[in-house]
Length: 104
Image (tube, rainbow, N blue to C red; front, side):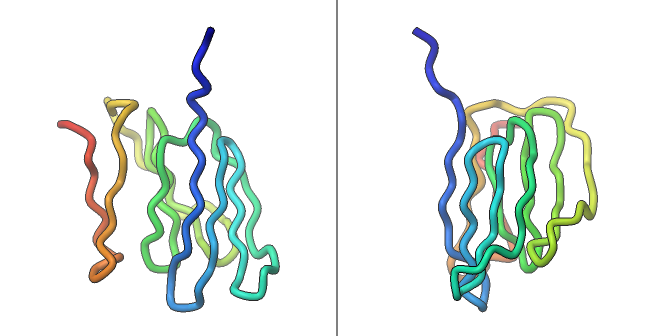
């Protein structure tokens, strides 16, 4: 039996109270009224951090930065190695400073 390794994320974020709902490969951002603002896909994501008006999507090979306002790709930074069991931690007092729990 093969384990289902898809990540599921459900997280409120930002001053507007937006909601990120993600299950690989789909990502959807809803505004505080429940209206869909962004719908996009990032294949095989491991975790997602909400940083200001950006979504930092960690994949096995890169960190993809997306606009949380319209979903457009802002940057795609390659990674040479990442542990597939890592996560991103975010402080409720400093959400603009995500911290990786991936070993280096």
